[in-house]
Length: 318
Image (cartoon, rainbow, N blue to C red):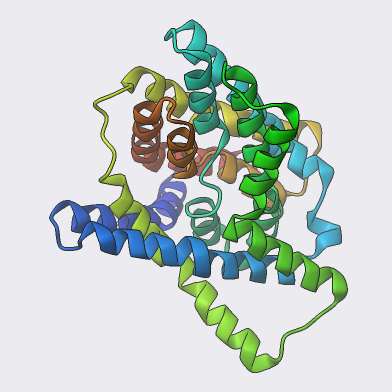
């Protein structure tokens, strides 16, 4: 038991310490809000795409891109999307578009900015292959589901062709998706970078996670829990508990995946909603306060819930 607690402390606390440091520095005005914006811009447009490029560039595609791994994660994510959307509509009486925005918050786990560093801290860099396989289709698939559902729910929604264009635009204007696509192309074509160039790319990629975590902490100061605490709590419960439970059940119990894949998929599923949940809600001006509250509340609770999942997965023999 003591060993498990020490493992959790050594894994989770450093990650959330960096998030907390960013939150504290912005809250006490040691950093201007423009600095937080700059950090997140650097992360999402440069460092994180380079990190994902490098992950796909080095990924063993034949071993990691497995349908059972992806089904284990995304079956749980999609189930949580519909569950949260139904709860927002039937329990909290929200309008259809608002319900979709709440559902999207339960769908879009923070797979990159929190999922990768937690998995890396827990099991090492070599354990990140399944994470990158999941992340490779994360934003495209989630946005496709969210945009399609939102357009179908809105009375002023676009037609099928315009909706398809919106989905494609959202997917392929994203710098993270571009980084993944270029890395995948290099991998499939067998292209290799010269040693000095690869070394520089690796240095830039290493900056992604600490900067992202610090910037995420600063960005969380922009949100409050003053609006939509009920839907936010529902999203936190669904995303932090039900998604990883479904993923663990499928990956370990149904498909019998290797332990590394079970651990990566379950930990990634246990992450709170990413900032994209707020971005999506703001894009459609639907349930913006509820989405912001869900990101803040779930991220705070995830310090404990992620720790609990680390212990549970370890005690299950993975």
